[in-house]
Structures are given as structure tokens and as C-alpha cells.
Amino acid sequence: MLTIIPHSELTLAETAEQWLQQLPGPVMIEVPGKDRTRCRIVSTLIHGNEPSGFYAVHRYLLENHTPATDLAISIASVRAARLPPMHRHRFVPGEYDLNRRFGKLKAQDKVTELAHQLTEYIRNRCPTAVVDLHNTSGASPAFAVSINEHEKVLKVAALFTENMIVTQLNVGALMEQNFNCPVVTIECGGANDPRSHEAAYQGLLKFLNNDRLDSLATKPIQLYHHPVRVSIQPNLSLTYAKQPDPNFDITLVPDIEQLNFTGLTAKQCFGWSRQPLEQTFEAIGDDGHDCLSDLFHQQEQALYANANLKCFMATMRADIALNDCLFYILKTK
Image (tube, rainbow, N blue to C red; front, side, top):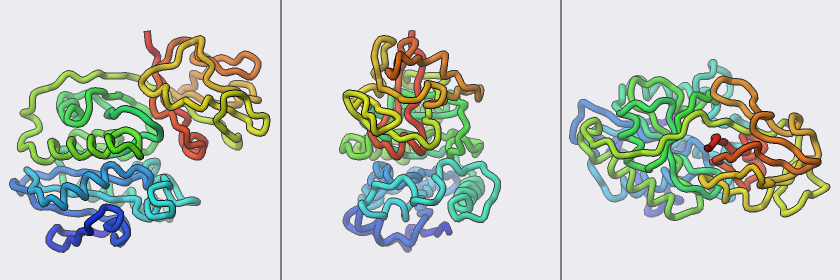
């Protein structure tokens, strides 16, 4: 159940990890701002292994800032984040991924119920903007994601990054919900990179302490449209190596994270599969159709792109690649 904590009742530990251990579970922290007529929402730890946003809000609260407007901070997957080793688990094993349950019909499980509680709370607060702070599953520069490119969305995104992906893919994420205001996901970069934590904090300062977000100058931001979500078919095994491993169905090259925001060329082998291509992956675009054969081909076991592709969210975490997705890709010229 979601616990509401007014700022006047908040007890902060000296370190973020100590504070995490003290939290009662999923919480919404309410901080009064200079303007009590408006509210902004910050979401953190929707995934327990993505701590940059959590570190940023702990630092912000510890420094005792007064935000420009009322502020509500969501710290969601506390149980998953606390599982040893800390910040290793995306969600509690055996339960749903919270960021795949928004917009789903009510169910008896606690994760879907939490998604409904968070959605209802945000709608009742009528925020002027919502920012959902995440980390990428592998090493990566920061980027934003949104379902539209409205000018107000771009202004919020530009507080954190110079790159934004615009997508109509529906996976059950908080970002996809309609709150009648800009809703932006910020992928701050890799979870273990201190630069990601600093990017989250610096962006948070600008987002929370600027009085009028809509009056900010619109900064140039690179937009990327129509990403394709590439996922692995069920019941396959995966490893990472420089050559195919006969003990696994799929072997990916060990430097696959280096493809994030750099790209995959048509002549570049990115892995091997013992299964035919269509039994190995699916590649779902904005229209909901599988475009796998348009994007990739297989020569014997080796896997290649049909054209130059830009990748993001590629990871060296086999559990995430198997249970969520392998990566997202965009066609490049």
C-alpha cells in the first residue's frame, strides 16, 4: 500500500541507502512549495535497480530546498530495491514489473494495485508536470522518452538531456498515462555511473526550482521517432561472449552496451543464435506489427542488421534482456 508522508513528518537518514532501509514501503512524500496552487510530481525507483532518481531526491531533501511549487515525490519499488544485493533487482522475483502494470485492469496482486494507487494519486493532484526518473539497463548517455513532442514536453526534457525518443509503443509504463500535463521519462544513464546520479540531481534542481516551466526558452533537442522494441522469445537462454557458446541458445557480443547511441552497422555481427531468427526474437514497432525480417538477418548462426541501426537500452544483464527486452532500435540513414 502507498504511504503518504507529509514533509513535516519526514525523517531523513544521512545516506540514501540508510534512508531506503527506513522507508515503510512505497511512499509519496509531499513537500510544500512557494506556490501552493500548483504541483509537480517526481517519480523514482519504479524499478528497484535504477537508483539515480532516488539518490537525487534524497540529496534535494537533505539540502532542504523549497521547490517553486508543491512537490510530490514517489518512491515506488522499495521492497525490490532493498533485496540483497541492494539495487540489483528490477522488481521482486515472482511479482510483476511495476512499470508494465500502469493502465492495466485492477487485479488482486499488490503490484497492479500500487500502479492504480499511484495513478489515482497523481490525477487527484492535477500536476503541471510529471517526471519519471530511471536508469538505463546498460552503460548509456542520458536521454528522455515521451509519447509526444509538445513544446511543453520538450522544455521539461531539455532540463535533463539533449536527446529525446518519441514513441507510441504501449508497454504499461507510467509515462503512457494521461495526466493532462507533460509526462516525461528521463533515462539518466547507467545505474552504476556517478555521472547518472549527478545528471538526475542537476536536472531535478532545474525542474523543481524554476518558477514557470512554460516560460523557459525552448532549447534544441535531438528527437528520435518510432523505436522498435526487440525482445527475446520465451524459454531461450542467453549469454555474452566473443564467439557462440554451445551451452546457450543465444550468444551476444560482450561489448553490446557500446552500441547504445552509437549504432549497429549492416556488416557488424552482434551475436549468434542456434534457433532460426523468427524463433529467437520479435521486433514490435509503434504500429504493433512485428518487423523483425525488415531489420535483421541470419547467416548460419550469426546475427546481422539489414541496415545501419541506432540502439539504446542494450544491456549486459541477461535477466533483464530475457525478461523485458534486448534493446530498442531506430533506423538511421
